[in-house]
Structure formats: C-alpha cells, structure tokens
Length: 251
Image 1 (cartoon, rainbow, N blue to C red):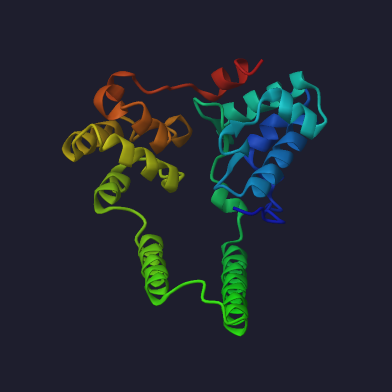
Image 2: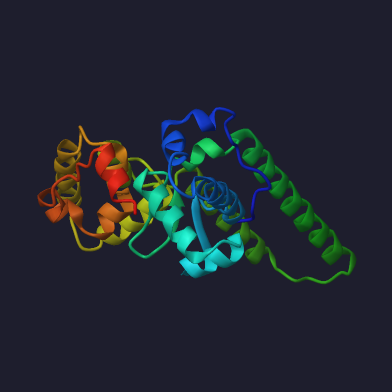
C-alpha cells in the first residue's frame, strides 16, 4: 500500500492526560518528538497503524535510532513509555502498531486517493486495450477476457464481503476491536485446527473476564488467536496496574 502524505493531529493533543504526564518526565520533549515521528512513519507505511521496514522485517531499536537521528537509549525509553501508556503496541514478533490509528486518518481523503488510483488503473487498461487493437495484435482470446472479467468479479466479491460469517461472530463478541484484517488472517489459521464452537466459547469467557479492564491491557484479537488464548487464556489473569505502578516501572 502506498504511503499517505499527511496524518491528523488534534489541536488539543497537549491537553491529553497521557501527554501531560509525559511532559513531567525526563527527556519529555524528545519522547514527544519520537511519538510524532512514529505517527509520520505509520503514515508512510500506511498499514492500519503498523510500522515496519517491510512486511517481513520489523524496525529494530537501532533502525529507529538511525532514521529518527536520536540516541538508541532515548529511543528505547520513548518506546517503553509510549507502550506503557497504551499509545503504541509492540507485538510478540516485534512489530510496532499505533493504537487507535484510525483517529489520525482522514477517511474522506483516503477514499479520494483510492478513487484516483482506481481511475488511473482504468485509464491504463483502456490505453493498453486501444494500443493492442491498433497494432492488430491479439494478446488474449475471448476465453482469456472472460476469465479476467470473472476474476475481477471475484475480487469485487471479496472486497465487498471480505470477512466470513464465522469471523463476524467472533468479531462481534471480542472486547477489543483493532486491526480487523490481521485478526481475520489469524482466525482463518485457527479454524484449520479448532472448531468454531470452541473459539466462540473461549472468546466469550475472555470477554467476560476483561469486561471491567482498561482496553490497553486487553490483547489484540490477532494476538489472542495466534496464542490459542481461547483455550487457556482465561487462566492467565487480567493485568491490573494502577497509574503509579506504570509510572514507577517506566525507568
């Protein structure tokens, strides 16, 4: 997915309680600069808030220190602070994700970009068709054309109904709804080895267990599925840290 050229920042961002607490900490200015740089990097990646070098290579602390031009110790402090406040999540495989990424996106402008892309692709295909006709070169026969049309229809069906009914049942009861696309990928893998009844039953138990828990302590749905937490996740207990404990453990 191509990068976007902008992200949304609220004019009231410095009134946010988390930002105000961070401003009382050592290296506060640098931590906030790194926060904005992470937002910008997520915009460049344009993958629903995830930040990575490519889909198979997450950024290391050393890489971020280089591209942000900051000491590695400061970068690590910033990442630890932002993760503690639930502003980012670092997955088990070391990918960084901006929490609530959708609030930094202008959905109307994103749709405009997608429409421009669709129009550009359509013009390219039309020019290619006309060029092939003028050169009197038959590159595809009628069967090939029909096959392409059917493939386009299938793609449209997938785009219009991307998620299965079984997954939507899981999604409707899961208590933290983030990164639906990644969760669906994990769900399809899980369904190869487990029944829907087992997954839904375990999910309901987990949802009941964490119903009074701050969302930042609730697992991302992809993590929940990847770890088979619907089987044994309820016995892990819910992490309950108060604000002072978070602050004390930052350093």
